[in-house]
Image (tube, rainbow, N blue to C red):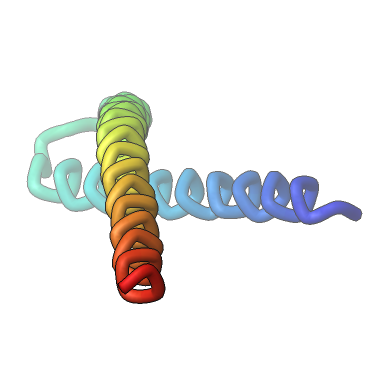
Length: 110
């Protein structure tokens, strides 16, 4: 198994764990909500809990998608900035080496 395959596997497992945790949170929130509504019949309670859990998961997925998009935007911005800084540093190093070489030439010529 290559390192890329291992990373993909870890991401998949992480995704499944996040989804399972979100489902459990949604179920818990649905149970807390339905327990406050004592006038519901059992079938109405089950229906409410099922719909609430589905909405909770949909909102979680939407939130995860937005977070991933923002992370990608930030990554691109930081990579662009990093490349610019790296070019500037390289230019300063080349200029410094040129100045040292010029100083050495002047010192040996005198």
